[in-house]
Image 1 (tube, rainbow over the protein chains, first blue to last red):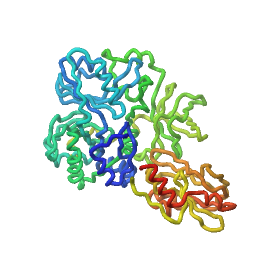
Image 2: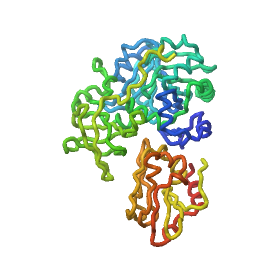
Image 3: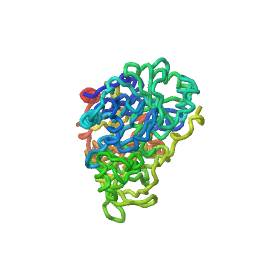
Image 4: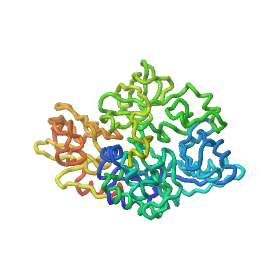
Length: 370
Length: 134
């Protein structure tokens, strides 16, 4: 039986089509429709129920060494109030999960992980904790709403005051802030390519926070958006989805997300990554025509099979062209043409593109939006 | 369970197509409200061509949505006599907005009404939807 978030009834009232995602019954899209939710997030702001994701608080004097061993990015360079995107790898270099680590202090951190992987992640964390490291699973008690899009800063500024937001940079967070009477952690991060926030609150206050944001956001075009739009937004923005572009059985080499791997330190999976360099690649492509080839369709370069489609969508922001991520064993470059064939006998021509396909507002200075 | 529209003058397939009897063993085909809500925003429809012969349970046409590509299974063996490209080529979202009306897909001429009679009545289709529990 799928789990439900505190907003389940709200989603139903908004005419949501629900679907199972990572063991949770989540809104795929509302009555508004996925296309409009996608466009609203690019042009105004979208509000997403992301309560299904997992959160852990990790504390203790040895936490930094623990992260340095477990996570791929340069976690030791982080300062208080900073968040960082990371992979957590297995010994084979496959991705146990992709995650964001938040630093409150050198001895107090939060790790945010995917919904479907959180139980395994918890076991993985416990199995590798040595010395003074305490792990607390706060997922069941933690609600999460993502407010994403160019008008999102105006909505939050109206609730917390402009001055509190003005200096908040990309991948920085405010550990404690009251938003409409709800105690929140406000993080300037997200998974859409647009400026916006991931907001954490007590699970029991999620509905209150949602209602406040919807009310205050009305004049800024706030639109409830489902996981369907989240998927098309993230693919355009060049971000991976665990189980597709990255997965436990596939070494995380040759991807557009090399920025999340820092080879200047020792971490689980590093040797396997080095051994697999040059064997695997992931690229975004744009497909000619109006049809999508479908996941797992075969990719050929110069007539030779060299990989498969791992995700495909319609790139709503790019004139609704079909777009995909492909994984290949052959190195390709932007502008190269590949052929894609699916099991239904369809043949498609696609062009390798630079990642991301869509460069949104995520990195712009906060001032520009207030 | 969510509420889905199930008009009383149509018959339905287990794959969520509706079929309307136009008389003279000619039938009009579309997808049900349940299907339209579950596939999401339609972005493109690859319709059959007039005079195509399509068998029962073969793919009659393909509906592309933002995320997926869905076959529409044909329930009536016959020959295509009309397709709704005039509306759907430029406005595929009509399927989401008016699946039982302007969002119809194609019409097919059958040799008999046997295939049609084998389809679910509105009451049976409602029961079928209730069993799906969604």
